[in-house]
Structures are given as structure tokens and as C-alpha cells.
Length: 575
Ligand code: FES
Image 1 (tube, rainbow, N blue to C red):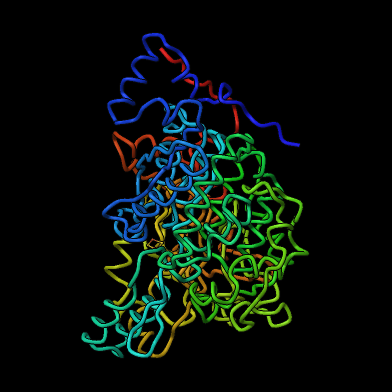
Image 2 (image 1 turned 180 degrees about the vertical axis):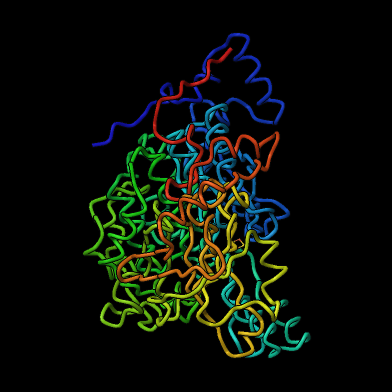
């Protein structure tokens, strides 16, 4: 039986329990906001960490949802305080939101630490917001529950359903190939994003919110509900009600984010055909919980996990269809034998209890295992002399014939070089070439942007080529597809072997053998290494300087080295 906390045990009691001069300051300022002591005294104070912003389209419903959460908190006898945090708007923030994931994680942790908070609701969904909020909450380890933004409704253009990202790349390739008019392109632009909510393909947002539910961080069934569905508002109020009890029960993230819960999240991501970005984020999340996870765990679990979500980019449907087909609970029930079902979740119940009764209503969207899109290996970790510390590929989203391929490299020194030359008709590029982009990693870009789906040259598009082997130390949007080798570690900017590839070098990719080899003799590689000059750092001051001093490589999760682990941090003294 759980021992419940008493009001005097609440963390916020340290701020509001004394009648000394400091206590006077806290009470008088609460009064200034219109609260009497009856509003908050002896009640769990719940921080609603809200990543709403006018610039984040995916979170445009979050003001309303924060009110829904508050309703739930108040009904359950808690006291809600909304605290805004950095929004990380995927499409608008440059050079990439990934540069700022750790900043939001730090902000989350320190908001929780420095204020009178007993528990929190984490409101996120747009790509990096989910891992950032969870990382911060794991490090602070106060009772916490995640409120997912929910996917937006399916896009629509004429008679076609449109998926975020995935269809952009597809339509853009057709436009570059001359198969789409400006007028059609404009109509497409107006129809692809037509409601609040995050990208509704199996991009990083749907992947990471699903990972959050699978590791026990949300109410069961929460993540698949479309943002515009009234059930989403009701789920938000339920979330508010539940966090109050979590405080009394003292149920904290590190109580349920165990090694088995991380495996549950990774297995679920693999069955969904989730984003390659999840590799970086899950390693970082696990390490915040004190679990020494490596990227190889993805590869191990991929070998036994079927991809059964028929959702773009790997499949055909969209998240709205996935919800109507039964949602994440139904999918997880299909792979129950691959999950650790006794793991606890935020509602205090086990995964087995939360999955009980889950049904698939559309077997074309959530496929039976004997009709899996791929039986295993929806994601693979490669190694070789080109990626000694690993690289990642999503074989399920690539043309099959490219999964075993040797071809000559065409190398671009950085993104600008690629943009300037990729369509040059004189470039010695054929469909068998291997396109290589350097200096696109955590330090080189900086921020490891989603550049990894390198463009196919126009002249090859016109010939009908739609996929080629492409290699970089960048990431790739979860909505992207193609034979793109990503996250090459160490990155070229710090002298990883990718820095030494030259035009015409043969590169061998063999996904079945998990191999990525640069076919250049060792002594020649050693000569190139000796002649290499490390590029100058990108930042002289500010957050960028802190970032470049402490960011870890992709295989380590791109966390700041000083934020990893679970070393105790003292509670603030209250003076
Ligand atoms: Fe927000 Fe895709 S832009 S999730």
C-alpha cells in the first residue's frame, strides 16, 4: 500500500509554512495575485510547464489546454501555476531546435527546482519539446506527467490526403522535376497544416510522444488523440486531476523510467517505424535516468521488432487514421509479448493493466504481425571505418536495392557548398554515386540539423531517380525517407573519418552486415588525417559557446556532459 504524503511533507511547505519574514514575502505576493491562503495552503502546487508561444503552430491550442489542466488540478484539490517555457518551434527556429533542446531541459529542471513546486504537468509535442521536458523532469525528479500536444488533422489537397514533411519532400521533388505547377504548389501549401497539433506523420513528434507514453509518462491512450478532438481537452483535465494524486503518492519519474521502461519505449518506436531522431533522444533520456544506454540497444531490439504501423513515411496512413484504428494502446497490445508489462506508469497502474481491452479497429492501419511492413530491422546501427562510433539508417524508408550498395563519393564540404553545386549539370553524379555532406553534425553545423535527406540532383530527378545513398553527420526529419545514413560519429568537424572522404572514393553500405566502409587504404587515410586542420569554433560567446564546450556526440545523445547522470543537486536554501 502506498504511503501518502501529508500537507506538511509538501515541498512547497518550505516556502509557505513559515510565518517569518520570508514567509511573509511569499504570502503577500500570492495575495498580490489575488490568492488567499485557502487557495494554496497545504495543497500540492502544480507547475504547468507550458511551451505555448505565438511562434509555435503545433502548440497553438496550449493556452486552452493549460486551462483544461488547471480545471483538473483544482478539482482534485491542488493549486495550479502556469509557467511558460521555451517553445522550440521546429519549423521557425534556426539553425535548428536541436541546438536548444538542452536549454529547454535546463530551463525545465531549474524552473522546478527554484520555485515552490510539488509536481508538474509537462506540455509539449513539437519535436524537441518532448525529450527536453522529459530530460529536465527526470533530472529534477519531482512527480511529473506529460501532456502530449496531439497530432494535427490530416492535410488535404484536392482529393489527396497530405502528411506533414513526408509529402513536402515528395511534392518538392516533383516540382523540381517540373511535374507540378506554381498554382498546384500554392494549393498544396494552404492544405497541408489545417489544425492545431504537431506533425501528423510518424515524424519525431509522434515518435517521441509515443515513446513518452510507452515509458509510462502519460495517461494511457493520451498521445494518439488529435489535438482538435474534444477528447484531447478531456484528457488534459484528467492529466491535471492525476498529477495531484501523484504528488500525494510521491510517484516520481525515476520510479517508473527504468531500463525496462526505456526498452518498452524503444520497442514501441521501432514497431511504429519511428524517427531516427529518437536514437539521439532516447540515449539522452536514459542517461538522465541513470541508465547507461547505447545506440546498439536500438539495433538489438530492432532485430526482433516488426514494423506494424502503416503510417507515413514508412507506410500509407496518417496519425488521425491511426487514432481511429485504435491508437497506440492497440499497437502496443499487438506487440505485448515484446514489452515488459509489469512496468508502472503515471496512473499508478502497470502497462498490462493499461493495455487491457485495447483493440485494433482497422487492420490496414495497425497491421497484424504476419502482415508487418517489415518483419524486423526498421532501424539499423552501422559501423565501420567511416563511422567508428556508429551511424544510423532507417531501412524501412529506403529503396530496397540501395541497402547493399557500393559507389563513388561526391563530397560537399558543408550545406552551402551542397546548395551551390548539387544541381550543377557538370557534377560527375550518377544514380550510383554516394552523396556525402560534411560539417553538419552537433558542432559542425552546429546543432546537427535535419539536413540528412540530401537532395537528389535535378538532372537525376528528371531521369526518374527518387532515392540514392546519402551520408552525413546530420539528423533527418522523422517525416523524411530515403537511403540516408545519418548521425555519423564522430562527426567530421571534430576529425571523424567523414572529414577525410574525397570525390571518387568508393563507399560500401551493407545494411544486413551493419557495415559502412570507406574503401581507402589506411596509410592514405592517415596522410589525409595528418593534413587536416580543425575548423575554428563557431561561437565566441553566449549560449553557443557553452554548447560547443559541453555537447556530446550523436552516439552519446548530444546532451551536455554536465547534465548527464543522477548526481544529487541540493534543494535551494530559502532565505
Ligand atoms: Fe512541430 Fe513538426 S513542426 S512537430
